[in-house]
Image (cartoon, rainbow, N blue to C red):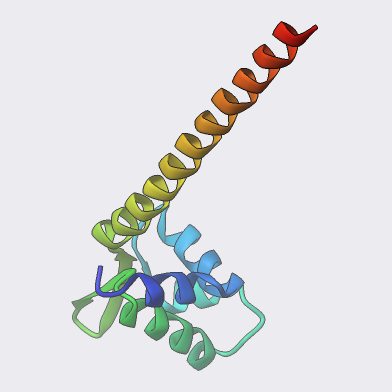
Length: 111
């Protein structure tokens, strides 16, 4: 992925998350992506541009139609970062559990 910050910033908007959710079920054109939204096609195109700039979607031309799909590598990059964060938190919780267990054992020995 080009930039984690750009990826997470792009995902901060609910419209862009909805677009990605739709693309998770398969490729779509800009017009297909615009249908469920109460906004103009140019507004949807601006959201798509943000997703493209962040590297989260790719565009494929077929004649005059432009098909968009998710860029799996970019999603994997975001996921790897989140997994590393989750793993770090899990290790911290395990250390806290060990510390609390030690404190509990010390408290039992004093009584």
